[in-house]
Image 1 (cartoon, rainbow, N blue to C red):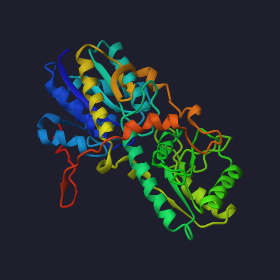
Image 2 (cartoon, rainbow, N blue to C red):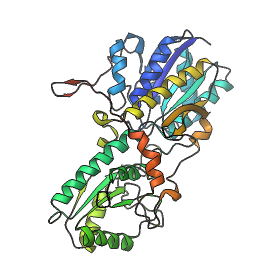
Image 3 (cartoon, rainbow, N blue to C red):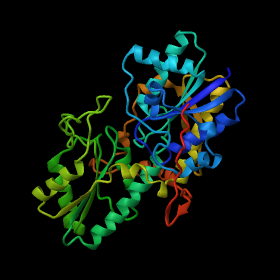
Image 4 (cartoon, rainbow, N blue to C red):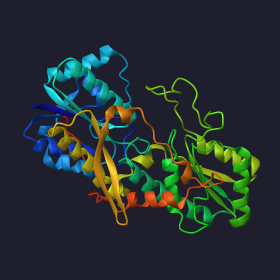
Amino acid sequence: MRGNCIVAQSGGPTAVINASACGVIQAAFESSKIVGVYGAHNGILGVVNERIFDLGREKPQTIEGLRHTPAAALGSCRYKVKTEEDFAAIVEVFKKYDIRYFFYIGGNDSMDTADKVNRLAESQGYEFCAMGVPKTVDNDLALTDHCPGYGSVTKYLATMTMEAGRDTEALYTTDTVNVIEAMGRNAGWIAAGASLAKRASEDAPHIILLPEVPFDETAFTRKVAEWVDNIGRCVVVVSEGTRYSDGSYVSEQKGDFATDAFGHVQLGGAASFIKNLVERDVKVKSRYAFPSTIQRCGAHFASETDCQEAYMVGRRAVELAMTGENGKMVTLVRTGDNPYQCTTGAESLSEVANGEKLFPAEWITEDGFGVTQEFVDYARPLIQGEVSVPMKDGLPDFMRFEKYFI
């Protein structure tokens, strides 16, 4: 099957999502079956609006620069394709530009979109191939050992926790408790990753709050008081998805922007809530940090392992498509722990889209406020090494596409 290909990015950006795009683009340029290599500006929305640009006109050094540039250089979106007519329109755009290969870099919703477009094209007899490339800092995609983006957000947040812990230790006589908010809607993988900062019992974090553990205000404030009594301070890492036993979030937003395009409740403010709770019930001064999207785009301190694996899954998506695979998402398969080794596999787009990988209950400590050594052993290999980011005038030098629209 000869024709053009298009690559798109969707959902929340990461420090290494562009490395996956680099892998796709460079592998596509090498293929004799792919005539033109296009980018969709702002994910599937770029296809809908025919905002498509020619990656073949970009400089090779610009493409290579994707490896060390954060966020989504092609442009991302949170756009839900809702009706059969919408999907049909997308297929018509692919036909118009002779696009035969679609590489979608994203999470669950992106895999679902790619799967439905693929099935519709097949039903119409249009020769077409859709392949998914995994991306999410949340690490909650099913059927893969871990997700590109997770190692880097963990490395960044754990470092932030170490530094906040030392700050709190230095000034605990006035700022006794420090609360750090981690991203993560339903799964506590990111918050759990902060545990890698802990090398001694008195190191931060002292308490981790996960969405998988129903939040008990009394038990929590009692635990904070224990740490304050024992070492004079306490650093708390709270997942934005922390919720009560009835399922309600401690940080649900209200108003016009309370949900996103997919109907997901917008979160933010868990750290502020915990800070106020500590000051009210424990009667000590507390501060909070809300790193928000900064934690997921820290390319200047990204994990080299994460970046290499992100590039690997991008290339592999193209390689599989060239051998006739279709309707699959590339997965990461851990083949060794000591030393750490990882290769790729492939799973059905529909199977991935309908699954969600929560943080395992067996990796949560008995009191519900920490994680076990088994998790640390799982996560530590993912943060190894640092990406070499070129600098300009003392700051990172990131790439940007010229975007020659067709």
